[in-house]
Length: 114
Image (tube, rainbow, N blue to C red; front, side):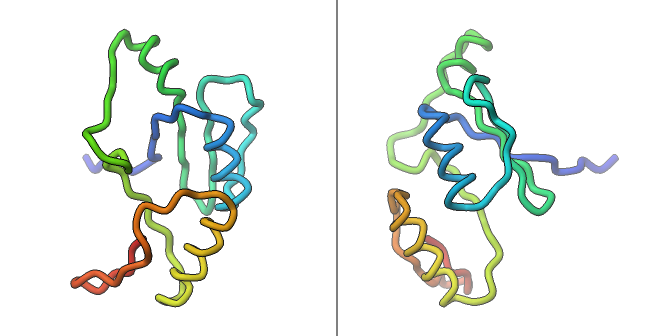
């Protein structure tokens, strides 16, 4: 039996800020009402589910922590037409309030990441 990839889930500490970012900056769709402890966003058949960290920890009676560092060991990938588009999108999301972790970089394996 093959598993079918369905969604990515993220723990967040500021649900309203994160929903706003993925909805208003990235352009994902959501019906989140601002009250639920989790939010689901969709774009092009992809689902992103965010859970309030404190709510999830209470629900599971367990603590979750990131290793030391900024990014929480998570990466999301988006398809764009070329490397120049990566740079333009990076500049746009930073202008709209995203905190950059690393500038656009062409990796040795040929991928442009930021």
